[in-house]
Length: 414
Image (tube, rainbow, N blue to C red; front, top):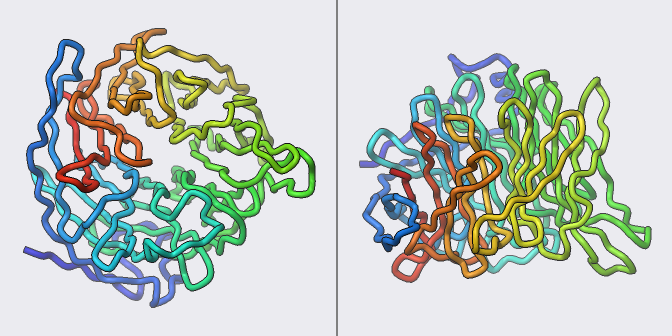
């Protein structure tokens, strides 16, 4: 059965005044009606072994999908249900923004937005429209918020959307038109007042919030295009708002020398005391892009996990960044990873090895307990996303090859 939800054009009861104010400014073109369809969850076979992650796996077969092409962003709500957004391909060679949600023991999906044609090229999207990772967050009222890029005629626009889980409504608003090369990973966070904060790349690292009722962009780190050693393109970011209201935006960029990329780096923009300042984290990552890096609170301190020269990079912020690296056993880490804190406060990382094997590692003090997920290999450029579960367990969502096409696979730790 299909269930339909519609948007209310003159504000919505039961949501925050700040969010209602934002809805007033959204044009009729930005509003849409969603149609949900059931998602079939079928068993996916894993191979057993002595050092295998004890898990069960299922494939999420989305109606209308011809190829799940992107990395999903996932979040668990207060009721324990998981929500995901990702780039999907449908008939007509079109990329769409897909929303999949869990409702108890079942799943359903809806198409949120048409993003552009798979054959449509635009040099400003340096890693391809299908490789973007739409960010996802949930506010204090249980409303989902997400950011994504869309091709419109000859331009690319960054959008912020919202879905009310209680009212069954959706809205979206343009944040900014992109005029330079942009990249795939953007930061999204929501503070205690339900103000939305976004970081992204447009002529440099930019930041925007909707405190005034609309998004106001601010340049944090401009491109240095006319200098021999400059920063441009490939700027990816993640974001964390601390309990005291300070904002951390770790970001990755590229150093150029004589117009050639010579290294990649991680720095951090910090907003504290009403002032932005820049702080270094990792001066050089070599010339291999970091596919996924995450910041979250670990034992009361902001913690960043990232790829660093074949192993796991780790840094904690206590007014300054202290970096370390950890080995993850005999396997060599590729640049594809995601990390989060489990329900018991410990860190866990899902990652692909150089051989394309999926691993899940739980932190145990200064060491790691790493287990392979036999039967799932890296497929394309997407990387695994890890979501906390109960009792220190996790679920991992990956784009895997199922019967010859990209399909979302759910791996649940027992």
